[in-house]
Length: 230
Image 1 (cartoon, rainbow, N blue to C red):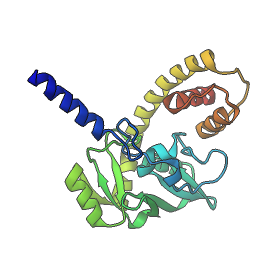
Image 2: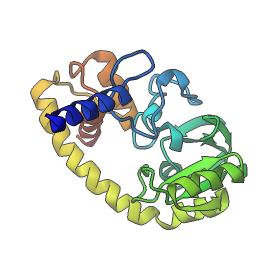
Image 3: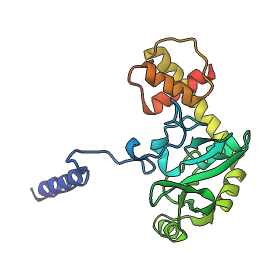
Image 4: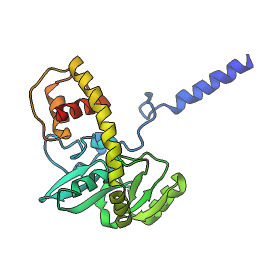
């Protein structure tokens, strides 16, 4: 009987700890995510909510977002990896990064990064990179979650160095996602004969046209990858 009472108390404490501010329940959140209403989106257009390179939803990876101007217009990225990828083909200027203290964009050249913490990485192979406006904030984050504090210049150099390795891992992930996307497309999507210039464009079209019912998250990403690969 005592064991039963203890179990009930523990269950109650878990339920209470899971309650949100409005009294509802929620699952553990993606550390990198913020509500769309709190995300600063610098790029324009119908596909503005998606990374301009890999197509991932920007608010879902907001705390690792970067942005830069290409031909005078801002493009936004889910990660420093996608920023580096765009640097391969474009002359970029005015690089910005999300300050994890204020959740606003700041000039990347002034930022301090906590690199290699226990918090999840975005695109890069297990090496997370979170930026802060002050070195003190980066130091505090690193004290709590591990890693080391680097300047933007040092962090960018690290991202460039690991770019080829990260790209190989990305291509493997995307190849697997394309296979899943093909199955989802054939099962629930309306067939179309349309070419897309980017994953972001494909995702925007799928959502606006209701092409695949209420597909979202990883399934939406997979279908978009498949459509771009056709």
